[in-house]
Length: 141
Image 1 (tube, rainbow, N blue to C red):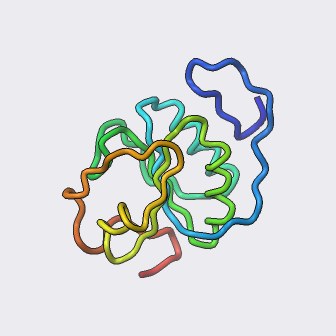
Image 2: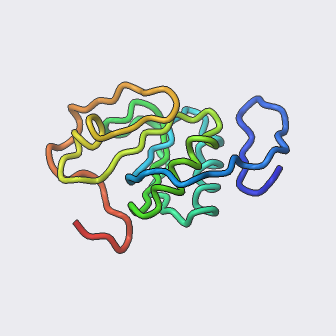
């Protein structure tokens, strides 16, 4: 299997290359959502290898507004045009929530969010009205 290519659970080996990406508009923080821990770890590792993103945590149980297991990946806004189109084409069945990090965590996870795959209903009442989560290294609010 080519480097950076993960095999979805229960699928046959896949020898195809990752889909190419083109230039697209920009944002900042995906959560890779799926109960399958191996799929989440594989895709997060591929993202880190390809784009040097920050892996903030592998969550094997629901945490905060996220009702299912997930992995949090943090990247800088100038990486958006590479990371998000890559995820659009190479998410391997994962549902991906991408949101910015503003001063309002509720809006970040709702009005400002985009979904790749199937949206998952979030528990927005668990979020603070204000800054939530950490910024990428080297970025200040």
